[in-house]
Length: 173
Image 1 (cartoon, rainbow, N blue to C red):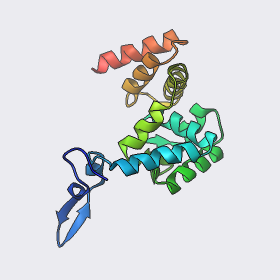
Image 2 (cartoon, helix red, strand yellow):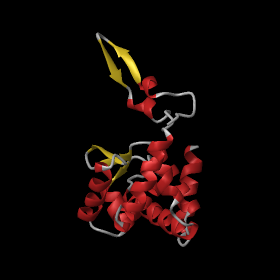
Image 3 (cartoon, rainbow, N blue to C red):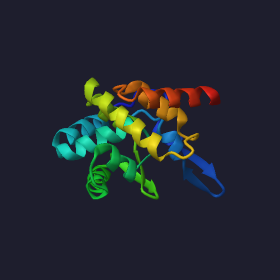
């Protein structure tokens, strides 16, 4: 298999004092071999629909995401969300990064789940993400741009909240 793009896996290895260190931030820039992308697609078709649904929701939430946000937005229990994430982690699709926070291992995996969400469903999920962030972010300055973005991509069923989030985002811009 070939690796397209100018970044190679070895670009993520950086010299440190008397050793080499793996810089995971560089990994995002590494293009995956086509066989890895094929493996992601194969796993997608063989994983449970529940797990795929959770990961599609996680992809729309954005990275990193928390189990509590995922469960709330997916309207499920944290136990179910955690089980789905563990299944995906065994396939190296996502990884835990601490304190109930997760991320996709590679941007291509994240993108694969975004591509599986239809536009109507994506708008519904964006709206639920915005509602979750609006309700839980206090005073919400840290997430104001995310709230405004998700409301903008959502169903627009809460125009008063969308307006409030956009006014706050505009004030901080």
